[in-house]
Image 1: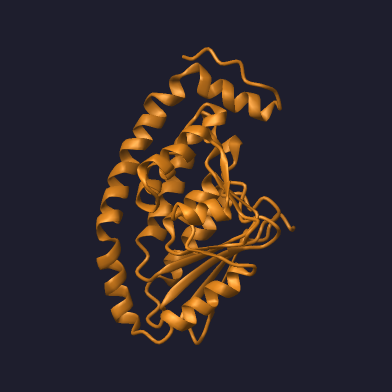
Image 2: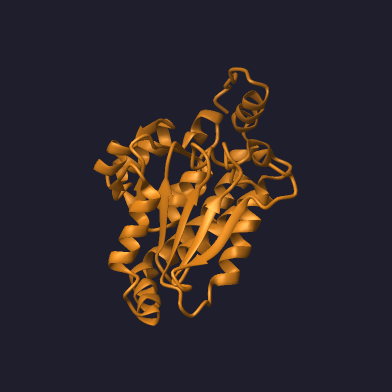
Length: 258
């Protein structure tokens, strides 16, 4: 892909009723600084589009997203990375119409955090969901705030503390995924047409704010707390820095447990 091309495609469909956002840097579709900026710009551009009734986020290639850039998690730049990522996740979470997401392949780390900030998740049977940050000696701030709103607390802790990935069927069983379909994008489009297209855009905007208000307020407050925990405590430990370095150097980390 042309290095100068946008990592995100954005366009309107259904006479302006549906905003399509497509991660377009396969196969990894990294949620890096460029992707975060493109998402933020698109959401800001279309936020007040008067006819809008939903957003659909999907991705090119075999995978939704491998997650954030590990290089951007290093101490020199992680503060800026966290702030920009959390800002765009709040844009998604606080967007004034439903945000649907269609997932295939790997949906990991920052990619899963993006999906968690959306609403209804449609998944291909091959989809895999995980927050592997703990394997690098760090944790996932946004997922820590968002997962308990999507699944029960023990299942949230399972994903956050083990770093394991789960398949689409297990994700559906615990409530993380709402539909498992061979073509998740088409399933999301069909759901939109059946349930949202005929609604009043004004009413949907008010209903979305009403339905998501407590979640929005709590996640916004939690993200500020978790940024401080990440930057002021975690990143001062040996193991966080060792885990990130080991990943980049393609070796096993040598934990000191400090």
